[in-house]
Image 1 (cartoon, rainbow, N blue to C red):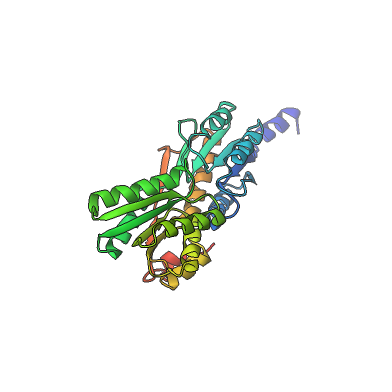
Image 2: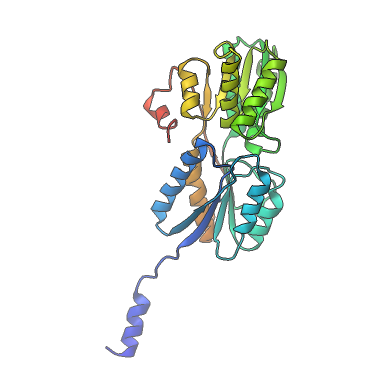
Length: 309
């Protein structure tokens, strides 16, 4: 074969797809939520077939400094895309902007980052999810009485949006339900349990409670049990673990707002890969839904698939 024919033959051979280096930075390592999300991430990776994944996050979702440090460590030329679940929507702005300025495609998942340096934001409609919690609690309390809200940490976009959706719904649709406490419990189960215990000591006669995420729901259930109040207060939690499902079965929790982190992870990885290949997904905001899980529906197949990793 002549040299010309050899060159033609090689030029016609299909080019090998480049493996893309993607870094996923979750909020924490101590919540089941991220196990669900990683399953969705890995499904999208398998469909593409050319992804190297690095998964690294802080131990707890209130360790903002560690998350910023991790983002800076992985903002380097060989990284094609970063997916990050922001612990603080304001403090992550500059490090995200710096990563994007290096040509790294940044996708934000679950919890917002201010600014517009990111290619996509994939999240639950958290405002609507908070309103869903408020509607359930209002119905349980016949739309009158007192309510307490237990948040996690200030600056967490997703959970603040849930609290805002919750409070706005009650003001508009159940004005006789009065929010007597709206407090931050902390970013770990232990801190949330202590914060919940303090809240219950200050407001022992509160009728209903809304906890905005997995750690605060966990902490509130533990505090209610310790105080002998489990089942005596109408309690709406957020997210799912086996511990929280046990509370639901025992009627100590009267509803869990459950997201679809698998779908969030899947869509975030798809968006990151598309952006890295120069074909970003539109629109920039990708919303996933949440559902209300109760003792009446938690055993339905379509619900059960959302409840265990």
